[in-house]
Length: 268
Image (tube, rainbow, N blue to C red):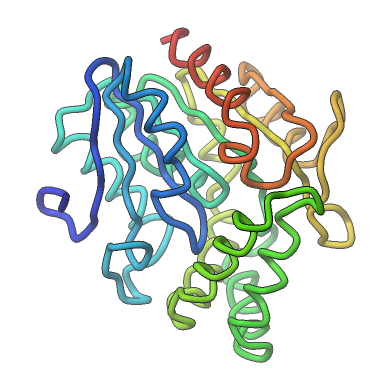
């Protein structure tokens, strides 16, 4: 379906308290298929394709966390989903935080799945440096490395190949501009966005990006700079580690992730 007054596509199913799912960088709403199937039995579920992703059109200028957050807030408002729990994965964590800042009155809880902060320091400088790096290496080289690190050797090969193929289909100008803006947003807004949260916040983490800039799985009880930031800025947040999986915990460990989402939604 096309969103009212927005150039984005979404799907909706079920009835009950609303859950809104937002995918990550170079991904699509299909990453939530196991959640939509599960929760449609008891909730209204909505998943959208962000601009430039999946079935939604988008020019590079349209692709930013600020624009995406405003889109999600408007989608919630236009569909009458007041009191929604917003669930984001990876880049989608930033989008749901931005949507909450845009319209906190529409949101009853937030769930961040395998988030991170990749930009620090001066936002404009951080953004410029990343854009220059991507221009030099090329989006395809960058995307292959980024997505190759997201999975464990034990990850289902079909899932790994699908994610990689889809990432490489993202138009390079969109991918380059969006990733640079993600870095800039992290430096400019991440701390403030976390600190503004006044609703239940659940952080589900399965991996971290280590000092060598390599994504590695987490062990139970392990801490990371990202989780330290969450504790500092949003001390009431609930943090849960999902072990033994890569970056796409919602697809690799859906039963565990779904149980945690239910518990968070029940706190509202």
